[in-house]
Length: 221
Image 1 (cartoon, rainbow, N blue to C red):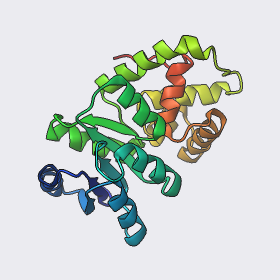
Image 2 (image 1 turned 90 degrees about the vertical axis):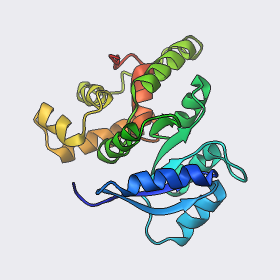
Image 3 (image 1 turned 60 degrees about the vertical axis):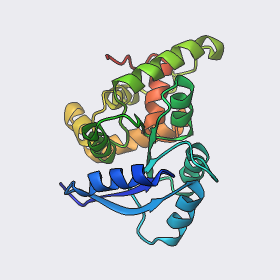
């Protein structure tokens, strides 16, 4: 493993937060940089702390400033920080909303420690990670909203960009895509940035949603 993955934990339930902290600190490649009790506390700590987390594990239902609103602020002010939503809500509308505002992974609080650690590592490596149930929700939500949206224009994407987008949807890393297509990782990054600009997606997670929405990638569950 390379450098440690720096994590911030945000949850108003102290016991739950400490439990997660204890669990993660046992992992060699994970470092907790700070904890926060709500969204406002988190934003203040991000402004105060010189060391920024790579990933924030964020509860959604919190007093003062909830996780959804805090995610919106962080996406604007600290776009490089990845947000994993960790919540007791698993309704489709909640998942779809969090993905739209910029969360790159979504975990339910009764998830296993193994799943949490896997999600952190996958997000660190690939920029996003959706497990089977979340992918299913994305598909169902998008299919139901498709008719009202009408077909979106995809002809402005080049065949190479579509190819790369399909590989991103298979949750492949930049280096894996480069190897598969005999390109340099730098070229793949360039195509990926073009995709983000052209589709007006906030992040890789948004690209996946866009791809499903436009039948570019069919996810096999």
